[in-house]
Length: 129
Image 1 (spheres, rainbow, N blue to C red):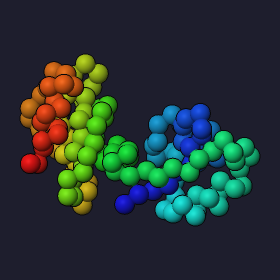
Image 2 (image 1 turned 120 degrees about the vertical axis):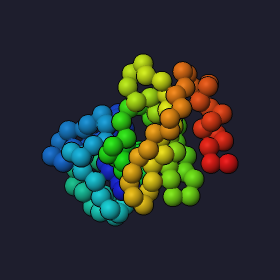
Image 3 (image 1 turned 135 degrees about the vertical axis):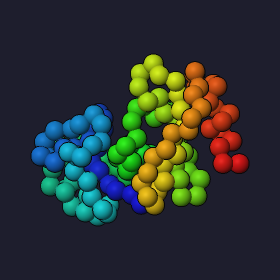
Image 4 (image 1 turned 30 degrees about the vertical axis):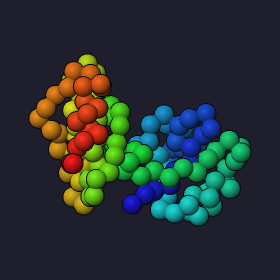
């Protein structure tokens, strides 16, 4: 499960107006189901050499695939049909592990809260084992 987007070499994803680049990938950004579709549009744009086609997957950009996932995501990994993320729900909040189901698109946060990244690393790396 992946989608394709047009990204500026300077950063940002091409907006649906095909003129502006958004810092974050969101619903306003143009997206394609295939690399070929993205290439067709990219070839029509000015400054083609400054635009890359990028593949966005649940591992590389979980917020897009899981709309209810809130906060800053620091790490992701996949275990079977789930994407496991280290998340800081709000700035300054304790870190949590989010479990995102690829089939149902549901997001669940574990109850355990971690004060800093080093304290969550062990739980994250051993999650599901």
